[in-house]
Image: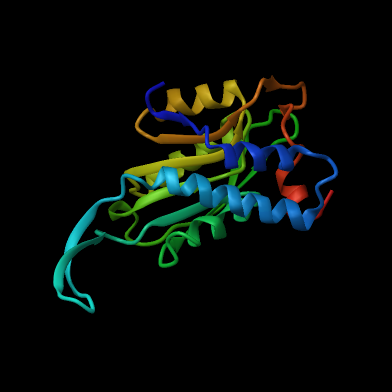
Length: 209
């Protein structure tokens, strides 16, 4: 899958191990999610377009590159995706933030949209969709579907942990989307949780059950 990058940076792997630990509390879990998002964002945004501008240094005037085009759009899938937003904003503080709200049917595990608000104009921006977990792939596919329906074109998807079935489903549905994965786990269990995974990311980020 040439549109999939499974990241191998030791800092990312180390922090994911800390995320998995059942003893990791809400405050530390939240901080780790943000830190991992920053590290992953560094990799995912390495192809942002540049343009040279004239700048005056204390020594002389020169041409130096800045990011060109419309500001980046970060689009978390609610609610767990919210935990990754600040991590990317640490890198690109002027980025615009949209939101996609999906809930998963407890019987079919399929996603249903309840909210979608995207920065305008969305078609001129590089869009980074974030969700800590890529399990069945249903929510990710639906989120990208909605963004494309609103005119989004250059889309990246970033998750911390993925299951093979979800990664394959997103790849097949949207082969034009660059996918960045912190770790590819073994499988889904009968309740569509990633194994070994880290439990429910939203509950662990927000301290709910």
